[in-house]
Amino acid sequence: MIFRKGLTVIVATVLLLVTAACGSNSNDAGNTASSNKSANEAISGTSSSQLDPVTLKIVVPGDRPADMDAVIKEAESRMADTINVKLNLVFIPWSDLAQKTQVMLASGEDVDLIFDAPWLHLDQMISAGYYEPLEDLMDKYGQDAVKVRSDQMFDANKFQGHIYALPLGNTHLAGRTYLVRKDLREKYGLPPIQSYDDLIKFAYKVKENEKDIVPLLAYGQSGQKDVSWGAFRSFMEYDPQLLRSDALGQSLVLYYKNNDSKVYNLFDEMEPRVWSWIKDARKLYTDGLIHPDVLAIKDVDSVINSGKVAVATYNEFGVPSSISAALAQNAPGAELEAVTFIKMEKGKNITNFKQANFQAIPKVSKHKERAMMFLNWAADKDNYDLLAYGIEGKNYEKIGDDQYKQIGSGYSYFPYAWIWNPTTDRLNGGFDEESIKHYQFNKDASNLTPSILTGFSFDPTPVINEISLYNATEDKYYNSLFNGVTDPDATWTKFKKEAEGNAKKIQVELQKQIDSFLASKK
Image 1 (cartoon, rainbow, N blue to C red):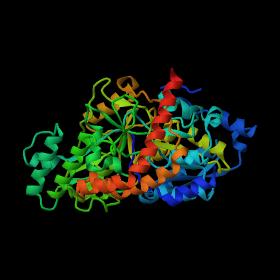
Image 2: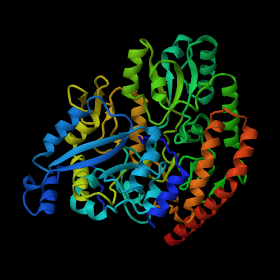
Image 3: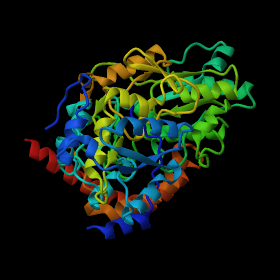
Image 4: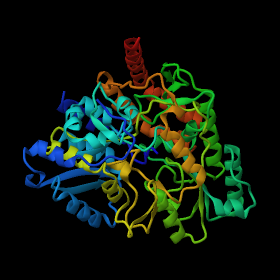
């Protein structure tokens, strides 16, 4: 799954500050024994036990799990006789992530590992020179971190020709799901949901009969544009297949259509299907189905967990165990099921194999080698299990070699924020059979159609100011449009008037770079 739960608040003034401040992979799918000891000896010239202790400052998104200290204590105990690393995990709320990490980097704060993403500000931070290229570090100290990731993950996730951040993911296509109250569906005698029309019929039934339940919930914060109600539909509808561009992250304003290498611009010509999604969202909102405060909710999970929502958009296949556990506690008898309309047909889905999440080593880090050694250590299956799922027997139970069952809520699943890989990651044993099939299907790269732009990396430097200004404008209008909160015609007119010029400059630069990339492949 490709987890993009975070928030992109591209703040113009911060990006301007950032701009001013800086002007061979293996595809071994099997589990591998850790090469930490040899890597440690390479850095120290002696045995690993003689390495000086080092504390790594690691910046990750989200909230600190209640049992984090116990997990860190166990991890540090395991590392004491090998890489001799202690962990200082700094958690930043999703709502503050973009701005705070930008300020950290621009101010030169001492950080050893940091979460970033193309939908956050990865391209801008790379262009500003904040991240260390990782090829040499991976060759010397990250052999196992490489082996647990496919060639496609590395080849398709280079930036400006280099690997500036370790790709995080456990599949080659993002999971997209509607979380649906199964108990309510069954209460009203409705069959399993097979289409979007079925989903909306269920929502209206809830509206008619459940006065305390909000029928539909989507995401409304500026960095959650891809999970706004209308825009979410692009992941599950075909003919044409609309793909977000490399320049504007989650936005559909610049987009690709099918696999023709052309950059389309909604301001030039509105795509009929996109407009239908916007109009549909408006009707659902005015009919009282979409949560009335959708734009103000910062923690969507907590609303889902309350049991007061019938359908919610979610960036994952299956129902997360943390949500199931919270729902069972807060609304006894409530049960969620995962509904997706993504097709499981060989070749049907186009992908550029890019991951949504990354782990970078800032250039200011004084412990770059040890940071890579830690990522290498975390690629070992036992160590991965600890960091991903917590203490065995307390936070989770193993189910065979590739699944797990979460125990309680003391340690939430968050490998997507720092160590994720497709080889050692376990599937939630509580997932339904269909969701497990989706994960297994999309782990196999041959089941997907490669985008003609696989391997392309957009350099935002020539239009960095335009991107900053555009994003600030888009944040005012995009989610209100795709969540139906404001009148489509009036909102689109204002949005286009303020953003069209910058969007056009970005489009032209993006197309120029794409054309150059494709010409170089001939």
